[in-house]
Length: 258
Ligand code: OAD
Image (cartoon, rainbow, N blue to C red):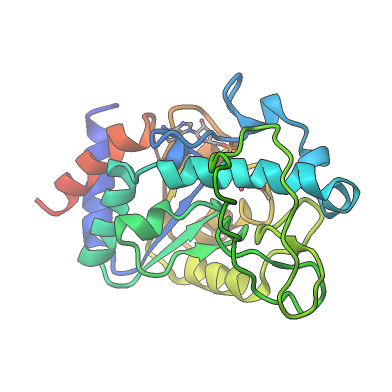
């Protein structure tokens, strides 16, 4: 990390009255949750999104898709929040007008103490039925004697909705589906009015989430990016902190409120 930029970033963060934090898969990478687009380790390097992350795929092979999401949910349950997630919760406690927006479907922000993360792409933990009513559902207990840990290609039959008997699907946003409208509206409003937007661990290529830092920059906020790699957001970020979430965030927060 350059020695001047983190200092300036810490000053701006410490002085900000309204902060928005946008996170992507990179914030959870050091907790052992794979990203999507990193070479070799990213989920989309190993799996075909069209076969696993669309409504058509679920309709065609519900057992394959449900099993894959159960495998991902099991991985997240084993994972612990890292010092990057904890630093974000500290920012919230220092600056009460902080909005955390995540593209992640894990619950690591919540487990680190973040109060109300906006989940733009839904959650692994909010399954619902496939009908328009989207009745909330619960996960069945694993049958006695059966391995509780699904493996990555393992097929598992999705449960049926207790209200209407329709199939239950993961509570995530799939390719081709609209983002939850209220979440997107709140996120865009927060980006319009913040002083500082921190974008952390996102490739910035999936829209409309990638619009959020752009809205903030065009509304006059300072955009600070934390990412070990260059991204298309480099151009709009006033400060680019090249490092991982756990390398950068605890230091940044300690310097902002020392
Ligand atoms: P990506 O996998 O596209 O990008 C992850 C980013 O995190 C990359 O820019 C990495 O350089 C960076 N990164 C990796 N390790 C990091 C670390 N330890 N600390 C900080 N940054 C790190 O993930 P997203 O941008 O979240 O959508 O992807 C956006 C959406 O695309 C996801 O929500 C998902 C996916 O398809 C849906 O499934 C709808």
